[in-house]
Length: 357
Image (tube, rainbow, N blue to C red; front, side, top):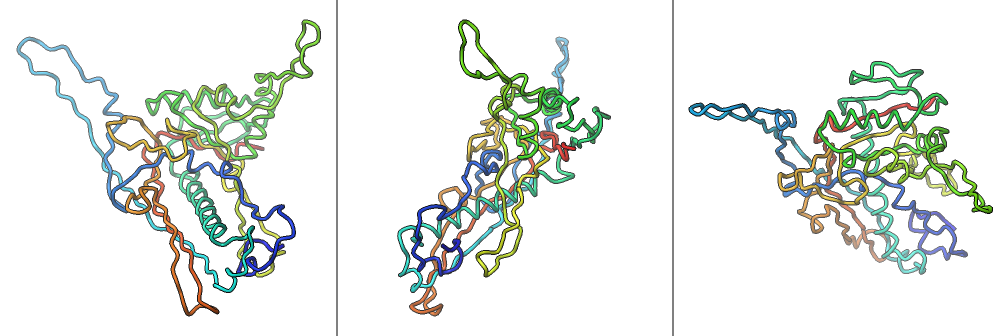
């Protein structure tokens, strides 16, 4: 059968129920579980942050009976947010819709695929914003040896090197990040590229800390063997809240009329990179930190969502009628997304790049 492209899909009767949609599982995308949502009242504007260095300065002094109290001081910085509109549409002619079958029902399939493409676009926007150079204070690059660890531009041993210890390297960065950002390890998340994740979970020094049963018990003895680490196990080894792995792909090739055209697929999250960041809500899809003193929880970044549309979710799908388009007229299905991606604290994340040989 045809791929889900163009109107011909709706008049082709599928001969099998296998691979009708081919939509990637939502769990492959990490942006919604990685970036806390910030509901805003306007499409763009300012929000206040307090300088953390001022909060963590001890200013209290001994006071004599007739002396005034020591004066405290902290600065407030206004930061800008923006929720630009991103849109996509699909045009469906009435004649094509009339021939739709159960598996390719346009009323179900079109909104589903438009939402799926919005999810894919959000993942790419997140990577373009937060996995880029010049965003975070501390940046780690893979190399032949550890070097200059006390600077912000750091070289660490490639994590697939037999001499490397990924757990020790990450926990050292966790310690440094907590010291810099004033947070607890359980407020941290780690997002890994797929290739880096597979090298780490198969590294001998990681597998040696993960023991699984092999064959069960024999007599009074238990046969155990080192095995691959799972993401929650790596999080426990590191002592952080959650570990996410970005496995979603996107096709970099332009749309072609030939449905047999071979796609050029690429990983969205850079495969050899990682991001360690402050976010107490990592793993909770759509969690909102409110970014206010009522909450007091820090975060490295946020995803502003305008509450002016779609009940605060910043997403709406509409149908627009065009009576002149095609026999019988056509419907345009349009999805509009109103959100953005903003850095809250440049010191609250560590970027790892090219960590494999």
